Amino acid sequence: MAPSTIAGVLGLRILAVVVGTVMVGASIVSAVKTVVMPRASSSAITRSVFLAMRQVFNLVARGASDPERRDRLLAGYAPTALIATLATWLLLVLVGFTLIFWGLEDAGWLHAFDVSGSSLFTLGFTTSVESWTSILVFLEAGIGLFLLALMISYLPSLYAVYARREVGIAALEVRAGSPPSAREMILRYRRLERLEEIHEVWVDWQRWFAEVEESHSSYPALVFFRGSHLDHSWVTSAGAVLDAASLTVSSVEIPRDVEAEFCIRAGYLCLREIAGYFDIAYDPDPRPDAPISITREEFLAILARFEEVGVPLKPDREQAWLDFAGWRVNYDAPLLALARLTDAPPAEWSSDRSDGPRIRPPVLRRRKRSR
Image 1: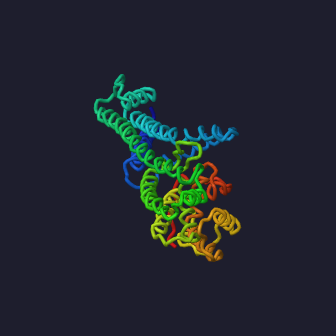
Image 2 (image 1 turned 180 degrees about the vertical axis):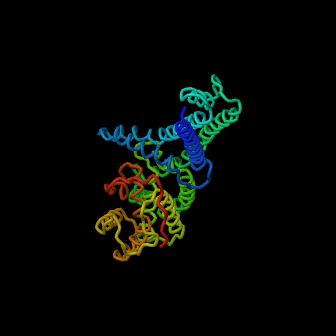
Image 3 (image 1 turned 90 degrees about the vertical axis):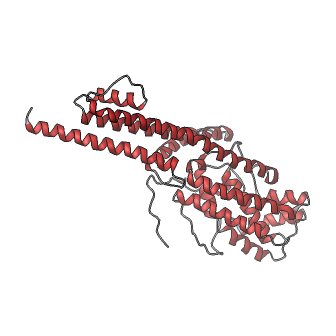
């Protein structure tokens, strides 16, 4: 064989080893970022898989005219994307070690693939040609077990957090209806003559917002897990509670309850943190008079309904509107954007006005600019 040909083959084998090593390393880093790290950390591989699966499920669900059938189809998106992510990690390791074995051993592509697959899935039906490469066989087998163990331990934790989230949403249905709305919550408390005891909602949901902020920013896949029932959504439930608190603080004539104000702050911080992971734009310090998606007429119509059933209201409606808008502006943009991102079921003042363009997060996160 000519020296130039030998040099070319040697260079190609070295390149194969380098590329294979990068692929294996990228798979491990992605798995660690997605599962191990206790904070939101972007992985291009995981994001790419979720975005690709989202396109597939949107295409399948597009022809579903029945809302219940569409919801059932979309409910499979997040679990399927998780399994596809694991499959992608394993595929990268399989192809990566195939390249490495081909580059290091004097054997063909088929043998390198057999050795890689046998090692990754610990089948042991093929051995490497060179005895010194046995360490790579053991390494690949260990990586395969590591990835599988990660996913096996990850799923129970994920579903435990999901179950706690859904308990809060199911409990809210008793107070705010299905789908939940701020109007219905306040009306129900009025009918039961327990309006001043709406305080309990603010306390419970401060804790709920804190848990969702921590879990959904650490494990962003949870954002796409749909509710256990057709009208349940963590986004619309959050919007109903925040709007109820904003209406109560701004418009209802009851003693001031700082827990309602704490609840609003906990809520908009939660929504902003999750929206930030998906590069959703929002103003972190909006002006109190900045535009919101709720019109003044809609607000006054709600107050008119409250007045009909005897809800005590503050006399200055103009000031009430300014106060409500001043609270709502803190979470208006993240709420509507997350409703679009998750394709939330219709609910008053949240997903019922999210007909804008679908949110498609970039595969690679953009570096945030300081204001």
